[in-house]
Image 1 (spheres, rainbow, N blue to C red):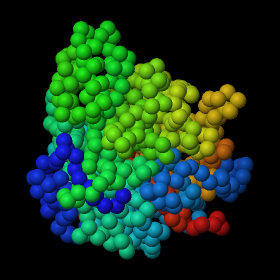
Image 2 (tube, rainbow, N blue to C red; image 1 turned 180 degrees about the horizontal axis):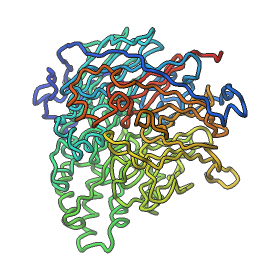
Image 3 (tube, rainbow, N blue to C red; image 1 turned 90 degrees about the vertical axis):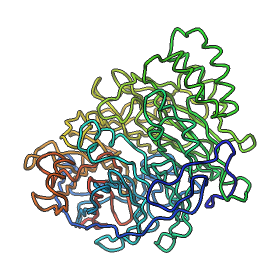
Image 4 (cartoon, rainbow, N blue to C red; image 1 turned 30 degrees about the vertical axis):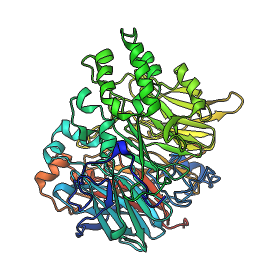
Length: 639
């Protein structure tokens, strides 16, 4: 698993070089050691002011006490990822967003701001994910507008300090794009460049670079092993699968890698924004060039006939001939034929439409398959080691033909969505179900399917019609699902008034379906508009990061709110904040205004901007923020 050691597939010999000031492979090298110049990463840890609030709805019933713990989650353990720490953005390969680590409580509570001081290409520095080597070491990625840095951070004692750092390829955005509304939205809707990286149990970080590369970064003794970093170029695989330059009048570079994760056997899967699905077969035979074979397919060609019949009616003349050729290309997984097929697809079905199947979210991995959602459908795929092909799970084919796996979609980007489809990474519910949220025209729906055959189990409307969107994954704990509304969260320059809402669904075994848990949450307005809600079983609390309804000094401040999972009562909240002038940033006032607009800059920097939060050791929550990340922590026991 940990060594790219066999030959590259002949059809996918890579011809791109690294574009990140590195000394990576040459133009004809598919892979090589990855090397970047060392430099000092600039940061400053800063303690924020803290305000802790107990909610009367809870204390009037239970006093200033905490809920009883919940039984630990017992899911299948991925053999490659850590069995203790979060290895991915969504805690585990199931994307359950459930942790057995205890979160912070109102006991000597503190909030620290890891303040990134990088400027220029590395402004702002927001960290979208957190993984852990051990109880003393967190690994994250600092994202700037045009560059990114992997950080290894010592958290053994406050304040945190950077032990090591490595530059990784950036996404290439110009300052004028961030300053302009249209360009800014494009930046915030781009999930490429490492947000969906992962850390395996042996200390190897796998990063999908923004230039069609995967970088494997080994960490030992809390230091990056620089002479063992590996750079694998997937440029040809991605470019042959791209449809952007012909259908969307964009450049091939727009088809960026979005996510990577190993399957149950240890082969690394990857996806790109415009539909490439691939497998790096690190278990294949060795070859002299030291590179693994790569097998790639286009998501557009999986079930192509069923999708087109579902989406286009009546079918034009020539459609049947197109189906024959497309199905043949899919069976052979021949990306060489894909440029011609996509041109014919556009001619037959699209005209001047900009319709294109995309993969914007991460994917999930179970013991028997990989679950991927596009802006059209949900897929369960697997790799056939004998034929060297990516395949549908055969038990899902009949359901696919029925059309159940094409979810409701008006193909519009709702405010609070990143693209015109489902905003959810598929969430696996034990070994039974997989859950996503659709993009229905009036109401969005929670869709729950059986893992065995893809059959639709439940389809339930979410939130108020016309005011619902879900860009975060569904939280899955035993028989319970929790969904947060992101509708209206659009632009960090603005307050983004949002409808909010949090809903819980419980599986009714007698009905064989999910039903809404009425009266949950029990009180208050819950508005988890940007970070996925997460459950701490050892606390019995589900945590959400939201804005306060009341203004403080003219601003709706950000707070971490803890809700009793059993009853839905709000228990307490923790707010970190800076008063005017206390956030000692090192950028010019004009840059402040160009990045977060006028006024309340010291409070706006707590904006989460689509980053996640993660439970860590010692009663902590790590949460991405505009200029770095936040760390909430507390004593273990209540006084």
